[in-house]
Image (cartoon, rainbow, N blue to C red):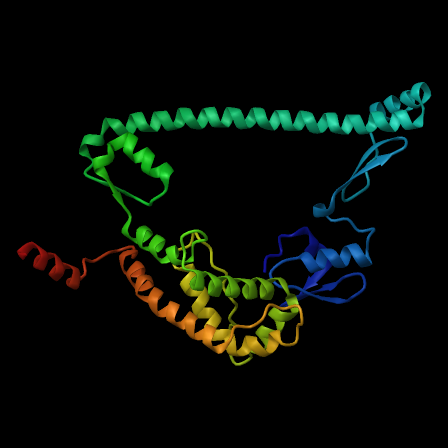
Length: 311
């Protein structure tokens, strides 16, 4: 757990919790500081960390709530006082609010201008790179990329479509994700994966459930956690299902203690997940084999190539 958050300045870190330096109450954590910040807001509202900055509008000026309460500058106070005399207090506060919106508009305009300059600079850099690449494109035999439309277009522009090759491992990963897609996927497979995702999300968001799952693995030096699949990470669905099946016996009795928890999978649904694991396992093994850093041409692929050449 990272201690870079400013919230940790008010707590003493333990293994899976933090002890408040002011009231000495132990607050559970699970990979984040949400519970710690909520404790400060409830029990010690006068303490403001860097992540809890608030805008403070005073009658005599404009101040910004930070680690220490700052008052407005002399110029702001003079402007507000003059406004009070001329327009009244309500009008002065209205002008103060208008100033805040005006400043925010200036910030948005400035950020838009910076973004525009960056996009133009990126385009110039891209054009320069393409020109430099075209200078030695004749020496390039082939370029292997993933299936992203942006990188495919870049390679096509620089080297031509005939020199582009699709990455086999990335294509294989797209095949593994196809049954779970929202539009073209298999309904039964999507339902099983969505159920597993709901349970995993609940366990990660509920500190008590995560703590109970960790305590149920006292015989393991490093307790295991549920894995949430991410579409951009290869074989993440396979790893999520394998980990869920491995922890299902420990997880089922824990979820029974929480009425708002998603329903646990039945025995037949777990058998369906095991079938999905058996289908995805060969793809994961092939992905690992072709993704090693120092690749030696496998003997079985060499034999297959020779056999095809004889045919």
